[in-house]
Image (cartoon, rainbow, N blue to C red):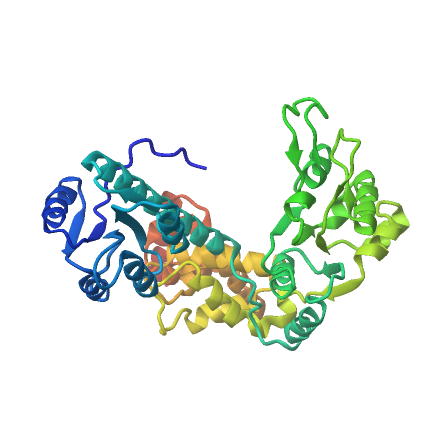
Length: 461
């Protein structure tokens, strides 16, 4: 978390000051701008509400005891018009009831009259600081959502529709789910969909890749540890089972867990109790576990590298995800969805040329949706203006197309094959020789020599 600013600078926020005292109206109309804020002064509550409906006000500074519409009434109406607005009340009749009523309506603070300008300035500074933190939190939340993506499953392939139906059945239950599928086919996305459609949807969703951590750390990550449990444990730490308590814990690549950790995981699933490393006391947790693997667990059981009782325990309900190559008809929708995560300039226009989309659909996608996401990001970076064309795709697509053309053609000499590759690359890069050299993996000088040789051969013919 960033360190807290010690001296928040006024951010130019727009303050609405409402009070029926002419002297205070004049004073605030002069002093608030000197503090760096914009201000609109109103003589009563009715005028304040009228201004609120027309202007983007950031903060209310209102007298509690105005004739007609009171400060509390103004704040209540302001919340209806602009829910995120900050509010501060001023009153010459402070009481416990006044404070409770103000806080009940979500006021930031209240000032007792008479108050010093220094007090007002300090309070407005805190309001400004709070608004900055709120903006930061909103920005971080947006970045997190973009990084995680949503839990919408893209595609209308028959196999994906079957997966959706199974998710709808299992999500509201407390059953442990095992998601099977190749690497990169979207197992975590399915786990998120299960969590989002479950009765725990408002609780934490915590994911861990069991194969991404060394064996010495995975137990501490899952179950936590107490101070001094091992060398370097200078303080206690909560494990992910505790973090996810009340919600869902996703164990990706569960087949990579060491046997010792498998035994402890089985105990947690059966009893709901965990024990931090180095601790003698058990802790009760309430976690719904979803697992995923690309490994053949049955084969691992036969080899003795995975516990049979744990396999049966996590496989209460199984979901098999199809590989991308087995639902290639979903690729256009997936590609457009992934591209819109990087580009906002697509609108309703064409996002991919027909040639580019044909190249994408002809690929076998051994890395599945994860590979597709990387390819789309690569193309998005290279493409200055949509649509994405073949030239924006990674080099192996160009080589794949060349191999396909060679397979369909009559026998060719090495020089002819080389020349065909150069011509194709020159077309893709609109004659940009530097880009062609980079794509073909040769120096610019070598490319010029080969172009000159081809030109001389053509002239001689």
